[in-house]
Each structure stands twice: as C-alpha cells, then as structure tokens.
Length: 222
Image (tube, rainbow, N blue to C red; front, top):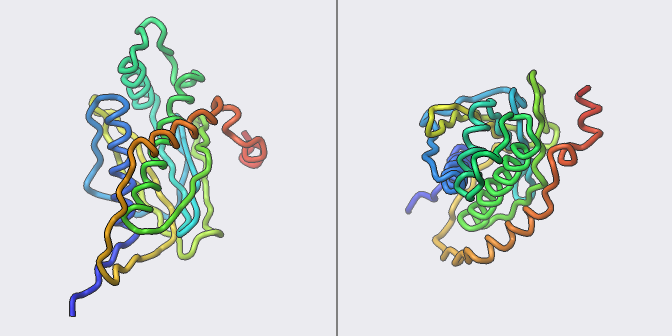
C-alpha cells in the first residue's frame, strides 16, 4: 500500500519563505534569497529597526514576524519605489519615515495573502489574516500567542537582499501535519481575482501609527 504523503509545519514554513521571496522579488525587481538552514527558536520577537507582524487563523493558527534592519528596509523601499517610477528626489531618506512603514505594510499584506492563497490551494484548508502591524523600535519586544496555539513551534529564517542586507522572518504556529489520503485535483487559481482581492485589502491599509493598536502599545509600554 502506498504510504500517505505527510506535510509538516516545516513544509508550510517553506511555503511561507517562497511567498516572501516571490513577493519581494517581484515588487522590488531585485533578487531576494533565503538561507537553506532554519533555526528553531523558543520565542518570537519584534526586533530593531522595524518589526512587522500579522496573525492568521482558521484551519490552523499562527503568527508571522518580519524584522528589518534599517539598511534592508531602505533598500527594499528604494527599489520598490524606483521600480514604480518614483523620482529619486522624492524618496524618503530615513527608515522611520511614514512612507517606508506604509510600503512594508503593503508588502507584508501581499506576502501573507499569497501564502494563505497557496495554503488553500495546496492543502485544501482555509486560513484568514488580520491587518499587518508595524513598529519602529530600538529594542526587542516579545510577541507571543502561545496560549492560542496547540503545541506551538517557532522558527526563524534569514533572508538576504541583492545588496547582502539581511532581514529575518519568524513563524510561530500549531504543530500540525496534513496527511494526503488520496489524490485530488487542484482548483485552478484565477490570478485576476487574487490581484483584485489584494488591491481591496491594500486600500484598507492606513499609516503605521493607525496600524498599531493603542492597547498593544500601552501593554508594551511604548
């Protein structure tokens, strides 16, 4: 008897890594890569200089964090805006600028949107995301949703930009396995529909200040 195919949390992590690379590479028209080695971690943190995070739930729950250094954030911002035809003279010069936070929020939204779409397509399970939240920080801030997860697993993956600036993605999610009992036909993906849905989500993005819940800031003491 043929052994059923099993998809683990680390396989799902690879799907997320591919979404990060795909979206950022397409948006910036530069080469984004990630390390073939993944690090097991015991806690997820927002780290300097810009920390972005988003929660998802549904078929399984999790937390995605991307921590950008000021150098990686500015490189991605500049490449993205220049590829969109923005004049060099009009670009922000500091990673703390509102425009940089808005851009990272938009890209984070696209990354998780691509990831949830792939999960639904390949695993036949639905997960939903909330709006990304961003903080410009100068110290580590621990973020945990362990109480909502079943035997949480956490991972960290290093990414590199075209100019060798490094940023990190952290994932915390349920320890889970998907077992393929029999073959099935994958539904055709309509790219136009996905783009339209993503555009509607992007329209709801506000500036970095409004993306961060005041209650969260109070709790973090920021």
